Image 1 (spheres, one colour):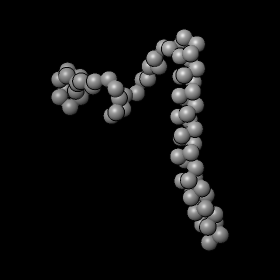
Image 2: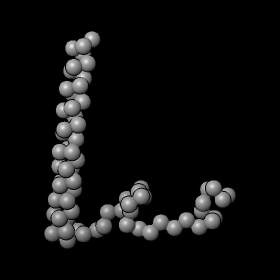
Image 3: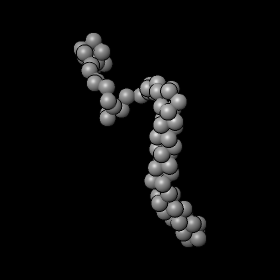
Length: 70
Protein backbone atom coordinates (compact mmCIF):
# COMPACT_ATOMS: atom_id res chain seq x y z
CA UNK A 1 0.00 0.00 0.00
CA UNK A 2 2.89 2.37 0.74
CA UNK A 3 4.34 1.75 -2.70
CA UNK A 4 1.02 2.69 -4.32
CA UNK A 5 0.79 5.89 -2.26
CA UNK A 6 4.36 6.79 -3.17
CA UNK A 7 3.58 6.38 -6.87
CA UNK A 8 0.40 8.40 -6.41
CA UNK A 9 2.28 11.26 -4.72
CA UNK A 10 4.92 11.28 -7.45
CA UNK A 11 2.25 11.32 -10.17
CA UNK A 12 0.38 14.16 -8.42
CA UNK A 13 3.56 16.24 -8.09
CA UNK A 14 4.42 15.55 -11.72
CA UNK A 15 0.95 16.74 -12.79
CA UNK A 16 1.22 19.78 -10.53
CA UNK A 17 4.52 20.79 -12.12
CA UNK A 18 3.39 20.18 -15.71
CA UNK A 19 -0.06 21.83 -15.46
CA UNK A 20 1.21 25.42 -15.90
CA UNK A 21 3.39 24.31 -18.80
CA UNK A 22 0.44 22.70 -20.57
CA UNK A 23 -1.78 25.74 -19.98
CA UNK A 24 0.94 28.05 -21.28
CA UNK A 25 1.41 26.00 -24.42
CA UNK A 26 -2.33 26.01 -25.07
CA UNK A 27 -2.41 29.79 -24.65
CA UNK A 28 0.56 30.25 -26.99
CA UNK A 29 -1.08 28.08 -29.67
CA UNK A 30 -4.30 30.12 -29.39
CA UNK A 31 -2.37 33.38 -29.76
CA UNK A 32 -0.43 31.99 -32.74
CA UNK A 33 -3.67 30.93 -34.39
CA UNK A 34 -5.18 34.39 -33.86
CA UNK A 35 -2.09 36.08 -35.32
CA UNK A 36 -2.12 33.73 -38.33
CA UNK A 37 -5.82 34.44 -38.95
CA UNK A 38 -5.22 38.19 -38.64
CA UNK A 39 -2.37 38.00 -41.16
CA UNK A 40 -4.65 36.20 -43.62
CA UNK A 41 -7.33 38.81 -43.16
CA UNK A 42 -9.74 36.56 -41.31
CA UNK A 43 -9.83 38.76 -38.23
CA UNK A 44 -13.31 37.74 -37.08
CA UNK A 45 -13.68 38.10 -33.32
CA UNK A 46 -14.36 34.77 -31.70
CA UNK A 47 -17.69 34.70 -29.93
CA UNK A 48 -17.85 32.73 -26.72
CA UNK A 49 -21.02 31.52 -25.15
CA UNK A 50 -19.82 31.61 -21.57
CA UNK A 51 -19.61 34.81 -19.60
CA UNK A 52 -17.08 34.70 -16.83
CA UNK A 53 -16.53 37.09 -13.98
CA UNK A 54 -13.72 38.73 -15.95
CA UNK A 55 -15.49 39.13 -19.29
CA UNK A 56 -14.94 42.28 -21.30
CA UNK A 57 -18.64 42.84 -21.94
CA UNK A 58 -20.66 44.75 -19.36
CA UNK A 59 -22.95 42.48 -17.42
CA UNK A 60 -26.24 44.09 -16.53
CA UNK A 61 -29.17 42.28 -15.01
CA UNK A 62 -32.48 44.00 -14.83
CA UNK A 63 -35.28 43.12 -12.45
CA UNK A 64 -37.07 41.07 -15.11
CA UNK A 65 -33.95 38.96 -15.72
CA UNK A 66 -32.93 38.36 -12.12
CA UNK A 67 -34.13 34.91 -10.97
CA UNK A 68 -34.16 35.98 -7.31
CA UNK A 69 -36.70 38.73 -7.91
CA UNK A 70 -39.06 36.61 -10.01
